[in-house]
Image 1: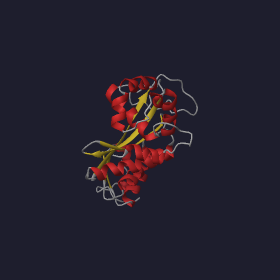
Image 2: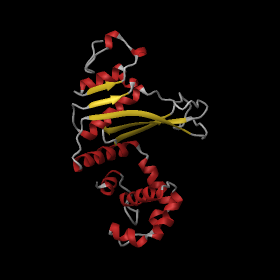
Image 3: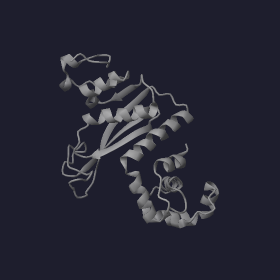
Image 4: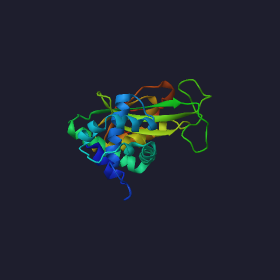
Length: 235
């Protein structure tokens, strides 16, 4: 999948960076998360120290050091991965590689959102905010995750994280735009719930020669906007 090389391409580090590259560290970190089921930064260095020879052989990196995986260095990497512009560029190219390598058919894409609540303190510019709670806990701050997946395999294509007070309706067009940048084709069926039936969303889908399939919701019915085929509407 060329993960390390693509990460190095989109997240270049300054000239004083020593040891393993940005992408190589992320690949080992992912291996740690998947094998240990733990995302804590301060545990990775000890894990690497225990299998140093194995990792050196797998990565073909003679200069591999456990210090490459200190929590300080991982914190720097985590901060870099949180930058929207390079992450979206990497995400788009990475998904394109995945689809080409496995020759996956791209006919349907499902998009939906969910919320994650927490007991953290709400800050003015933070992701965790009070909003409509799908888990019936309006007293707890939450963030919102919007994701697109390739149907029927369920392979994630794009993911967007926004603050918890955001409505679902405006999230669909940006997510569809990101998917289009990844797959580079049209004539795709986008499947979503009734909130994807917003007029702006359906018009955007139709304007790009794609299709939309949404759940019927009587409360949202608007006679001038109805269109059984999901293509352009006469409003």
